[in-house]
Each structure stands twice: as structure tokens, then as C-alpha cells.
Amino acid sequence: MAEDHLYIVVYDICDQKRWRQVYKTVKSFGQWVQLSVFQCVLSKQQLLRMEHALEDCIKKGEDHVLIADLGPSDCVALRFKSLGKSFDTVVRKATII
Image (cartoon, rainbow, N blue to C red; front, side, top):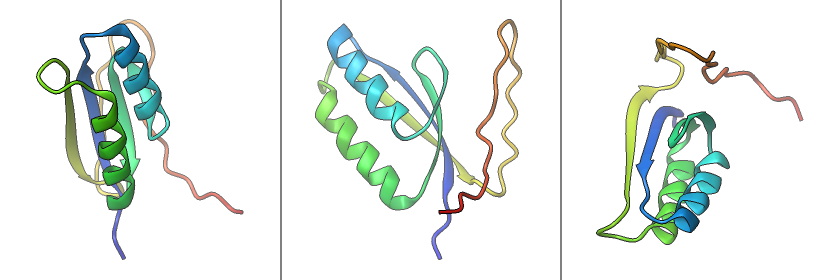
């Protein structure tokens, strides 16, 4: 069984309209941390869907999206040091349907 990984997604988008599109796209896959920074727990398929959706939003040569793979989400102890506003990391929990 493939395991989910924890990703940090950061971006620098030159155009406000494209920035909003990228923000909405990444938000649909993960949790907002702060301006242009998200944390996402994704399967391989979800990662590919997010990458494909982002390719449709950005303008090559002007915009920049970085996706950092921190490894299997159940093995990563994500620690942020937050100064100023409080910050919550992604909490993994089972969803019963």
C-alpha cells in the first residue's frame, strides 16, 4: 500500500489573478500555514493531480512553485517554530464514512 507523504508547498506568483488561482488550488489539497505557504498530506495520485492543476494556473518563466517532500506523513514529526501568530500543524485522523 502506498503511503501518504507530507509536503510543504511555497510559491511566488507574479500576477494577482494567477496568485488567487494557485492559492485556491493548493488550499483544496492542504492546510494554509501563512501567505504562500501550505502543508499538504498527499498520496502519490493526489500529488500528481495537484501538480497538474498548478501547471494550468502558473505562467512558466514568471511564476515559481516549490514542493518539498518531507517524507512519509506517519514518520515525520513536523515542527515549526512560530513567532507572533499561533500556528497549527496538520493533524492526521481517521475519517469514518
